[in-house]
Image 1: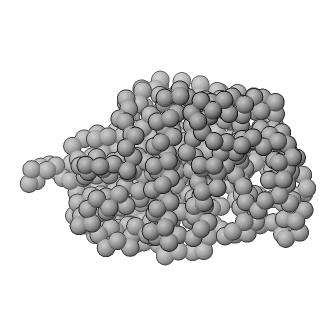
Image 2: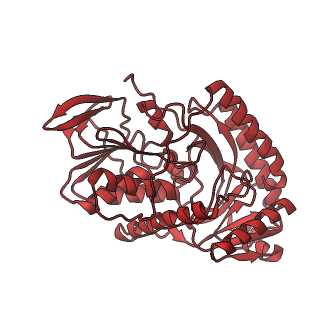
Amino acid sequence: MSKIKLPKNPGKTGWKEILSKRKVNPKLSNHSNVDYLIIGGGFAGLSAARRLNQINKDVKIAILEACEIGEGPAGRNSGFMIDLPHNLASDDYLGSLEKDHEQTLINRSAIQFAKSASEEYEMHSEAIQLVGRTNAAATKKGVNFNTEYAKHLDKTSESYKVLDTQEMKDLTGIDYYINGLWTPGTAMLQPALYIQSLADGVSKHSNITIYENSPVIDLIDEGMHGGEKIWKAKTEMGSISSSKIILAVNGMVERFGYFENRLMTIFTYSSMSRKLTSNESTILGGSKEWGLTSADAMGSSVRRISGFGGDRILIRNRWSYNPNMEASDSFMISAAKSHSSSFNARFSSLDGVTMEYCWGGRLCLSLNTVFAQGEVEEGVYSACCQNGLGTAKGTAIGIVTAEKISGAISSLVPNFVDEEAPKKLMPKAIMWAGVNAYLGWKELMSGKEK
């Protein structure tokens, strides 16, 4: 295998920047042998480590994270850990009733796992809050999406509440939205805080060691020893050998030689405002904390937070397909302008409030919206491709992969069923042109929802 190239994380993620500095785990600088090696310290990797420890506290576990915990994709999402159907490939997030019911149960298992982790590791309450989320509509088209969503939820006996225009204004302080559909099961995260707290909690177990700023540059087959195939993961300064490897690297799994030309790396972009003054917070009104996903899948997600870092607004919109896993500077500039425009359209009373941070984050999709998971070579298991829902589905696939690789008898995600493999993509040049044209058209059609 040639040296594995690590892509850059574009921009500074506001979620991490507004937190107090934490003690960073050291780089890997020597050689060791472990029972389980997890490559990737995000939702999937850290959840796998916690689950492995629950199964057997005597095994030795190491985690290699390429950057600082919370700096990578796990700390760059919008913080919605959604329990209900949320298919990003669909206009209204919905799939078949059977598939949606199955996915809801899996997501709820993941949320329960995350909540129990927050209690076990005594995380700050801001790390994860079970407060639900609102699907917000700013246009008649968006209202129609919410209406269809409500009908779908009725068929699955899920609870929800429709919010009228005044109730949306009471919630947000603005009169931008026509209606909303609130569902109670979503957990809202401060993603960098949650993932850092999970890492710090996991590392308190004496049998688990986390190495940060330690990207794997090569994964070498060392042959059979004692009846098991041994793998060596090399970094610039050290290496770890193990017979059991979990790849929790999402789209990066392709650079390890697996699922090649079957996964799409999509960037989403977010901006976070500077801290509002007390006068600006009063002028805005509404609730101090809320989270909106757009009724149109290509519209803006908007959050208001008021905890670490003060009272701030987050805007997330714009998408780009980047097969090379790098976001261009020009697109970052374009996304930042889009965020400012979306902010100004919604929060006209906050004239003069600017965006302090702008960043992009990688997510991974497959054409048939399935995981890239399972044993890909003897002793090597993939826990990748969460199809844009890394908080819940990443947690779930981390749990499932830990149970598979350890041979656990019972599962914390009993509703998980192995899926077909990701479908092969068309040539990259065709994919790049087609997907980006499609994304641009869908963004344009989203209108005021963006």
